[in-house]
Image 1 (cartoon, rainbow, N blue to C red):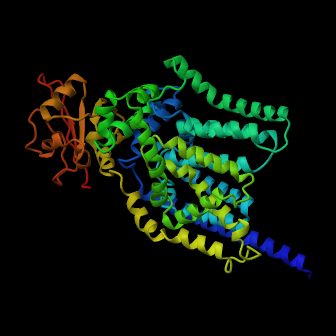
Image 2: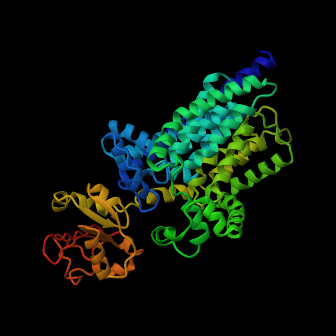
Image 3: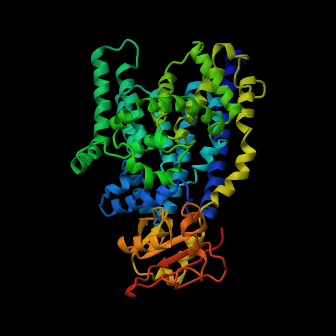
Length: 538
C-alpha cells in the first residue's frame, strides 16, 4: 500500500471516528438535558423565563386564534411566538412546547456548529465545536430554559454556516431569510441583517458589479419578504415601523445602573427617562459616551469570565492577537468574525447578561480554531492524531475545565422555578376560581390559572395596595416570599391570620407559614370574595 493510500485511509477513519464521537456526545447531551427538563423543570423561574409568561406564551396563543396584541411585542418581533405557536399545535401544553423548542434548537445548533467547524478546519475541530458547546454552562442552561435565547442561537449558527458554505443563488435567499428571522426573534438581529447585505455586496474576489448587485437584490428580496410584513404592520398601527421601547435598556445604563434593580427602574425610572435615541443623546451625551466606552471593555471581560471561562478565554485572546498581527489565513470564516463583531457591538449599549452573548459563542471558538490551525501553530503533520496533537489536547482540557461545576449546578437550576404555583393551580377551589384580574409582581401564577395578569407596582403599604386594587378593578392578589423581596411593604399580608381584616381568606394550606398567598379583595359593599392559598415552602 502506497503512502498516499495509507493517508487516505487514515483521513477517512478520522472522519468516521470524529463524526461518530460528535454524534454520540451530542445525542447523549440532548437525552440527558431533555430528561432533566421534562422531569424537573416544571415551571419557569422568576428570572428570564418571566418573559415567557408575560409575552411569549400569550402572544403565541393569540396567533393561534388569529390575534395580535402589540403589548406582547414590545421588545421583540413575532419570530419566537410564531415558532412557539407552530410547536404548540403539536404539543398542547405551551410550556412543554417551549421546552421542546429550546431542546430542538440546541440540537440544531450542535449539528450546524459541527458542520461549520468541520468545513473550516476538519473533522477533529467539528467534534471540538460540539464539545465546546455542551461543556459551556450558558449553553447547557438555555437548552432547557424557555425563551428566545436558544432559537436565536440556532438562527445565528445557521447564518454563520451559510456565510462559509455554498455559492448558488439559493444561499443568498437563505441568508436573507435567516437574518430576517433572527431580527424578528430579537431586534439585535439587525446586526445580522447589515452583515447579510454587506456580505452579498462585497464578498467574492473579482466578481463584476452586475453580479454583486444581483446577489444583493436576491438577499434584499428575502429580507423584505421576511421582515417587510411586520414593519408594515407596525407602521400602520403605530406610525413607526421600528416602534419598540428597547431604548429603556440603554436608558437603564445611564439612569438606573447602581441605583435600582431593573424591575424598579421599569416601574419608576423609565417613565422619566428619554423615549427616543436622540432624546437620550441630547440628555447626557458625555454620560452616554462614557457608558458605551465602559461597556465596550467590560462586556468582553464578562464574556471571558462568565460566558466562556478564562481557560478558553485565554485561547480566544491568543486568537485575537494572532488576528491583529495578521498571522491567520482567514478566508471565508472572516465573514463569521465580522458577524460576531457586529453582534457584540450592537449589545454594547445595554446591560450585560451572558445569555445576550450566547449568539456569538461559536465565533469565540472559531477564533480558537483559526489560532491553532494557523501555520505557526501547526506543530505536527497529520492532525488526525488526536493523542499527539498539542492543539487538540490543550483545547479539550480547557473546555473540560468547567464541566464539574456545570454537572453540579444544572439540576439545581432546573428546579429553580416556583413549583408551589402548580400546587395552587391543582387545588379544587383555585381551579374553579371565577375569571378575574390578578395582581402579581410576576405573571407565572395568573397565566397558569388562566386569569388576567396585572403587574403589581411598588406599594407604600396595605392601605395603598387596597386603594390601588379598587381603582384598577383588580380582583385577586398573589404574593409569595420571593416576591416580597421586591415588595417589602406588603410583608404584613403574609402574617395570616393576623393580616389585614379587609382581605378575607378562602383557602389556606395548613403548612404554616405560607410561601405563597392568594387574595381576592373584599370591598366595602361585599361584592367580592377573598381567596388565600399557601403553596409549598421554597
